[in-house]
Image (tube, rainbow over the protein chains, first blue to last red):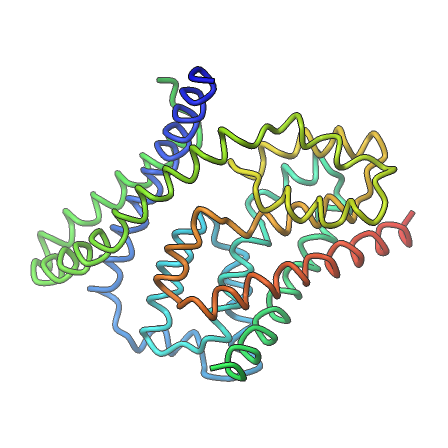
Length: 141
Length: 168
């Protein structure tokens, strides 16, 4: 039992250690970008369109990859910059459900058809999930 | 400790970002000060949650054994297999690509593609990370999003399965 606990602690520590440099790099990059990039840039990417912005959010989330923690930080900052919750939600969902970076590995191990179908469906679902979530949140709060 | 390719890439990435800081420090020192102030505010937010995440990861690693999960994805598991795929997807840890070989084996043994898609979709829901997610976006929003994603995962699985059947 004590050995199992030791293994669990080691595995958790290794897992965090592995993601630490990526997380540190992202936090540093987000901080630098916040100081250097004018707030108007985000508005240039996200047009404020309820139709186009979720699509843009889902696209960016699909391209970018990494720990979900990173997406929370970027998503939180996007919200502060005035980007809509709809676009940010599509971004957050696509980040964790669509994996363009992992697509080659997924294709090799689970089949090209499966990988492409799953990622396309997940991309579309990121937008649908965003619309439904924002609608329900707005209705409740 | 053996450094993985992913970890090495992470260190390279951090190194490049630090280099960017040095360059900015030379040409635009004011931006560097603003950047550090912002960085400190993020660190203050993250550290307590990071500790909590570590504790939760230990608990998940201690109580959830991957080998025991395998049997619940069997072909004969029926309707019950869908909630099982959802739950195992949520509680599974580690990088997604580590699960591909196991899923490949299950696929070869006749596990439904829909279940694999559901499992992969629900990996997006990370219970240990929920406290930080809530910190950034609020309790109500995170709970609704989590619930909607679980429902969406079932439709995702059904669609993937139907498309795969059509294309056969």
